[in-house]
Image (cartoon, rainbow, N blue to C red):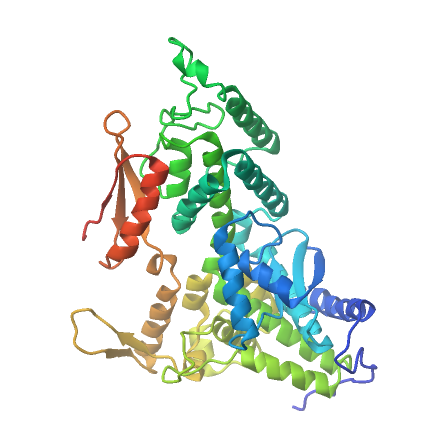
Length: 505
């Protein structure tokens, strides 16, 4: 059966590399019409910002955020990335997109018009739809409030530097950043206070700081509570201080230190809270790199081809797009000098393109592996369901097909510390496919690359020793050098001795 002829009667929206804001608006309108009416995407309103290469480098240094508090590490990242870019060792991203409402997309002013169209499709509709609909982002982030919160964080840290000195603030940030990976809730979260409650909490903390400034109160006997700088602080509104219920074990180390450290002052607790909230904001992105980039890449590939099919872009533009797209989804082999692991763009795009193929043109193998979607033709619904309800680990476990494993030439290697050689554990046969899929999915489990460290004890009635426990994943211990360096930062925030248990089983 021959394919229906493509109607390319429309005039191209542009024909060269140059662009202006009126042209950007027209191309955005064409992309938006197809994204909403053809792919049926559900997105936040878009806010597009055009920035220079130096502004892009600045965004790199601040984790891609438009606002961020000051810290020396951000300047270090900026200097490193700027040197690498100027010497030609690396390029810059065509765009950065921020999970907020409205969704903010930064586009490089150096991009050609074709690349501006690509990144609008990629960021403004691919990433945007994923941010708005994926359950992890809906559960763990608040897109409505993130920009206001970052503005507050920047103001608060700046005010703390003026009042207490940049060195003291920097020391707290250094220690908080050292344990940032241990500053997220993975399985639960405390109830969110309302805005009025947050403002009242901040007012009380500021009032307390002003009241405790006069050190003469520390010398008076029988006061309601010790107001000295070294006192254990109790904030009844927020259950802060050593008298608050601890509910051990606690997975979120920064949260525990913020609430229960005997030595921290109120402003230091607030800085810990800021770092913890920033860490929580990025936590879903760690678990959805393949899906998020795969979604955006699939969407931009579909929309750019649809623009060409409708006659909105020229053959020169589609060739420029395909050259860039093929570079993005390129997967070097394991024996290639460029190999640095599995490219999340390549894996995500391959799997999502394969879902579309299975839905439209399934093979007998597809019908055996995916009977629920094979030949049903509803690939849009299948993809949107997956984008909304899966993370990388579960998505790979559910949808990775034998065809994609063959196309990417995947195989599994058994690497045990006691074995003198590597062993190929899974190849391209029926049991091998299933073992390979499970093995690959496990690599995207957060537990494989983030240690499970929990607070299990705090002897506040005695010597105030804090006890942590590392629950080993598959018997793997912590590296001694990094373990000892990080424990120094925990001791600074706790103020007393900190011990770490690391049982083998």
